[in-house]
Length: 606
Image (cartoon, one colour):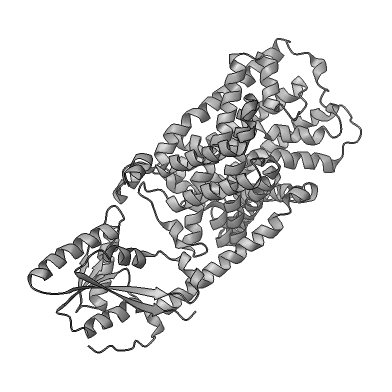
């Protein structure tokens, strides 16, 4: 426990959640790092396609870059509308589910879950490659270094969103500063005639072998620079009030920064006549030609490596919140809805870190060829969310809906085109999406069916008959008003106990009042004790209460019995979908020698 406190920090009360909200400056850093980092490889992806024709074709990178900026503008405007239409977050998943139906929503949600895992794996691996390129002796330890970085970022996020934002903001803004210095210096050299014009082919020069298909392929590859644009719409609950307005302003700032940096790098790469090389990145070549291998060159390379690693943090900000929405809809385990000691969704953070490490180890840290899969995982939700917004405007027709419809229609059309181009031109790299996405949706549906079956069987309205039990102080921990609790109370009454005390441990004061009202109407003859737990612990307040009752009972020669209600799923694997609170309580009470522990099982039939 002491080690946990050192690593993660003291637990926070639920009432302190407001202190864990982000202002616009920190939010821009923590939620834009993925999008901004893509400037380091997005322009290069365009050149990698054009170089298959010849270096003379590089002038096409300018109109292609303009096309990417048009798509960026459409996405920023569209996601701005999504932020105000769905201020509680959820992004593409919520938009698709509410407007297109359950299955498109699950496709969007599943795609984004996988995409955020890939975000962490690809970003950390790319940043590790930048480090091992500078220090070749570390190349043999690529996987180990990447795993350490994932563990550090995971630990930082477990400490809370504001703490991670405070640490990560500096490298992000240093990267932005470094690239603005690079772009400014490059443009200045061009303006004073310090760059030879024969290094590049003039715009408009006819090039043999160029086809529309190739240009669309280059456009799709360059669009990988737009991964991460959707993260802000998923993470609206992380913003300070008024959250939607702050999120919209942050999204606009991110779009502007991304547009300036992307267009600057594309233009300098074209004007300098930069050709992509396996061992040196395009940004590195531009920096070397502009500054030589001096301090500014290494400053740019260092901040680039840092942001490539820290781009993973966008996944840590968005994955847990998306998981919360899926868990509330009963498509993934409810454990993802639980807040940890620092009020973050710790289970989502830990799961993301674990799966990212598995991916890094499985691919030996060489995940760069997953970039197309990573990009297509974003453009599928892009397309679905834009289409969902189109249907929303058509159905509701609010004031000024036509311009909004046109914006979403443009975004949907371009996103669909990019998605199709990925499948047509990079099928050998993106085909796994056709396998894992159906498997993920199947898992969603199986989990959902289980939760629906459980709810149906526990619901009092099912009028399922309860077998009467014929028949010391009895303590009965309760979490809800269900058949399993009713069954346990009947058993307690059969013991002819002098007193039965039901104990409820709410985390919120509002929940406490609502539950007490329901209980007084349902079971007024059974005393209910509410133990408010500001630190969201069930075990600690319950044990203190049991110890108090046990001391008084011992003085009067009473026996204390703790009856633990528990429903038993029909299939063993269903247990992982439920919080094992009863097991935790039972284990703790085994060490109370004067307390009898009785488990009342309620077996589910489905």
